[in-house]
Length: 200
Image 1: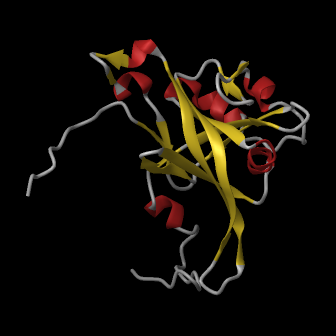
Image 2: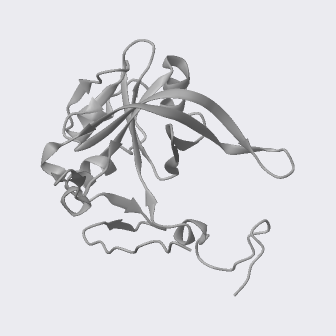
């Protein structure tokens, strides 16, 4: 089949776009506002942009608390969403009232980051501490504002659970990160294979 992505004339029960761009890593973003109130939310529009220096992004549907706090305070943390924490991650996605702690709702422990003024999830095996570089409203090809705002941050510190390191390498099958698919579907990384890039 072919459909016009602008007109969305696919005739399917649901827009397949999110099921096509998959699997997507989950940016489990923790922040606090100017009054020190914690916020935690998962974002499936999340990824690394480069590694020299390490820069990540997440995209928020509207100017939600994560994006607002990252802009206001200039920092945010990315906590790795893993299979062991999948239910807590899902609980933290609930649309709670402003100022209500998703940490408490999800049964998670907020602890201070080392280099930035934001909380991180104590139970998370990996956390990236980030300084906000840009908060950018997205626009379409006609210059019209999209619903989403992209937050770009530079990673300044990384926490890794030592138990996930084998011979100095992260063993992803021990971490078991989860990824967002389409619809209500998720995947877990518990098996890997290797390929060597051709030299020429």
